[in-house]
Image (tube, rainbow, N blue to C red; front, side, top):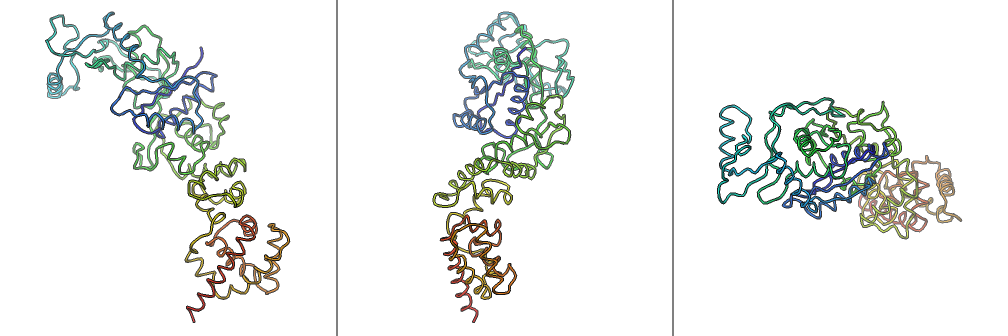
Length: 472
C-alpha cells in the first residue's frame, strides 16, 4: 500500500501556525513512508473564501518547503462529483430529502432542551412517504445508523468509540444544491485514495459521521490521527492575542523556515531529549505513535533560540542572501557597502531574527542621524578627543585596511598615550556605530571601510568639541 496523506485547509484566512503543523506532520508521514502528499483547498464556503487566502496558503507552504506531490485540488471544481455521490446515497437508501423549515427545526431544538436532551434534528422526514409540502426546497440528510457504534482506532489517541445514537442525520447537501463539509471531505478522501487522515483534534466529532458516510459508499476506511491543539503560554487555545500566528508573519519577522519547521515538529512530537532536527532527521525519525495526546504550549522564546541556532549554523553566503533581502525591506541599500555575507557573520551571534539583524546592521551601510544618548554621554567626552585624534591619524596612514592592521594601529595609539585600550575602543565604537555595542571593533571597522570610518571619527570629534563648549 502506498501511503497517501493530505493537507486540506479552508482559504478563509492566512496559513496559521496550527495548520502549518498539521501540514508538516502529514508531509513527514508521507515522506517517511515513501508515499504521496496531497494539497486540497476546501473552498466551498464562498462567502469567506478568497483568492488572497488561497495565495497566502500557497505562499506559506512554499516558504516552509512543504512540497506536495498532487494538487492543489479545489472543491469548488468538484461540485458535479459531490452531487453524483449524494444521488447515489439517495438511490441506495442512505440519504433522504428533508423539508423541515427553519421554524420547525428551532421548535425541535427548543423541545429537546426543555426535555433536557441534546438539541438536534429528530429525524422527522427520515422515513416519511407522504407528499412533501409545496414551495419548500429540501435539504438532503444522511441516514445515520440508529444502532451500534463507530470505533476509531486513532493513531494518536488510541481507541475512540462513539454510539450512533449520539449522532443525528446531518445535512449533506443544502437546499441550494451546495454540498456540506462532511460530505465533500469524505468524497475527496475516497477519490484521492487518502490512506491516512492527519488533522487537529477539533475534528474528532466529525470523524464518526464521516466514517458512516464512507461505509454507506462502500469505501474502505483511512487511518485517522488527531493532533492536540496548540495552546498559548496561558494554557488556552492559540489565537491572535498570543502574538503572530500567521506563517508568513514569521517570515516577515525574520525567522528562517528551517527554524520554524524544527519548532513546529516539537509541538506535540518528540524523539528522546533531542531539540534540534534537520529536515532529513525529522523525515527519518517521525512517527504518529510518538505524538503527544496533550496540547503543546507555544513558546516564542524557544522559537527565537532555535532561529538563532540556525542563523549561527547557516552557510555564510546563504545567510548573507537572507540578510540582504531584509536590509532592502528596511529601506537599506547594501550596494557600495560590505558584503551582507560578511556582516551576517559578524552579527549572527548578536540577534535572534534576520529582521533584527537588518535593523541592527544599518550603520554598516548608511550614516546615522544621532548617537545613542547614553552611549554618547558616557563615551564622547572631551577626554576622548586626544585618543580619537591620534587613532584617526594612525588609521588614515595604514597601507591596507585589514582587521589585523586596524587592531595594530589602535594598539599603537593607546601604548603611545599610556592608556588602557578601552580609552580609545569605547569612544571609537560609539563614533563609528552610533551605539555602545557592536561586533569586534577591528572587524567592524574593516567592514565599514576606511573612508566612512574616518568621516565618522571626524564627526565625533566635532560633537565632542561642541559639547565641550556647552559645558564651559
